[in-house]
Image (cartoon, rainbow, N blue to C red):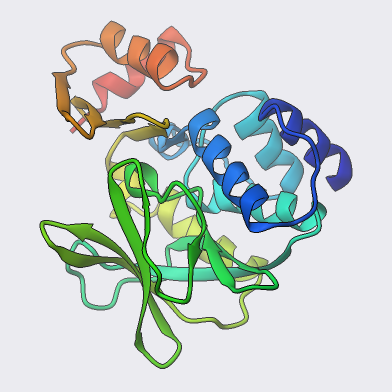
Length: 265
C-alpha cells in the first residue's frame, strides 16, 4: 500500500481529516493515536516477527489492532506525519529513569520542526508518554494531571522530564543527530529478541485516554486517574484476555491469552 493511502486510512481510524501541519493538528494526532492504538509487548512475548516497514506497521497497529512499542508506533507516526506535510526527523534515545547510567539506544521518537519551534512527538513510551508534542524551548506542558518539559542538560543533550514528587525526573535523553532505518533495526532487534530485553521479559500494555491511563504490567492492571489509582491483580488467563481486549482494545485470541498468562514472571 502506498504511503498516501496508508495516511488516508490512518486518519480515518482516528476520525480526522488532513489539515495543514500546525502544532494544534500535531497535538490532536498525538492525543488520538495514544488513545486509539495501544502500546504493548505482546509481539516480543509471543516471539513474533515484527518487521518495521511502513505497510507492516500499518497492518499490525491500525488494521489488526495488535499494538506495538516505540519502534513500531513512532515508526508509523513519523511516516504518516511526513506524508501529511510535517518536517520530521527520526531520533533515538536512551531510557534513563531506571537509573542505568548509559543504556543503549532503544527508544525511537520524532523531532518535528514547525515555524514557531521544534517539538518532540512521541506516541510510543507506554503509560508515561506525554499527551502532546513537547517543545524544545523548555516550556512545561501540563495535561491530564501531568507536567512534562524538555531540558537541555548539556549542549545538544536533551532530556524529556516528568514532574514527580515536586522534582523533575528525566525519563530519556537524546541528541539531535542523523539516524536511519538501519539504526532502528539494531535497537528493535535488541528490544524484541535479546533475552535480557525488558519487552522480552515482561508483558506490558497501556492506553492513554483523556481522563485516565490504563496500564498493565505482568500480573497487575492499574487505572491511573488524577483522583487516585485503581489496582487490580490479574488472577487468570481469562481475566488477562478480557483486560487486553476490552480495556486496552487489543486483538488477542483466547489461546494467546493462555500463552501470555502462562509465561508471566
